Image (cartoon, rainbow, N blue to C red; front, side, top):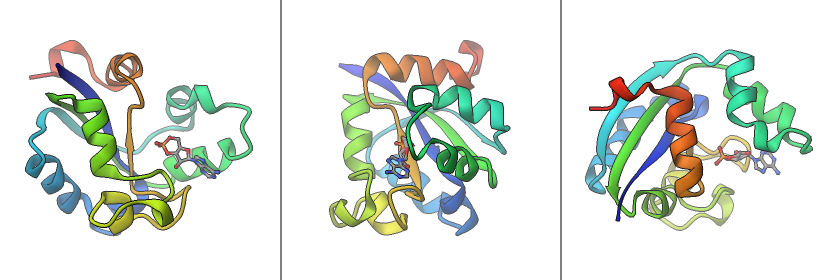
Length: 138
Ligand code: CMP
């Protein structure tokens, strides 16, 4: 089924100059970019986006990291997009990610892991709508 998912190039990857490499992998893997924007997230935007993780031990660290510099937000579309994007990113912890995946190539540790992807079709719809208006999706 054709699905949409939200991808984020995280601050570590943007700062390290890996945005282009990651967008290249997005295109190489057959995703259509519906919308794309660079943005330096405000604390409230990051906290709202990651609200599901509020109360977890790593929440503050996650918010600090996601607001330390600009990110690149992308709404992607493809057959089976949610699972496929998670496959291209690799495991959350770069040390456990498969060779050739984004997190293996460009991540540092479980916190600074270069990219984000929605974890379900339902969350993907919420996450895309968190950052993009319907009229921005081409
Ligand atoms: P992401 O896919 O963006 O979704 C939630 C993020 O929380 C996850 O990637 C990790 O970067 C981060 N995260 C998950 N577990 C930990 C942890 N134990 N320590 C620090 N950050 C974590």
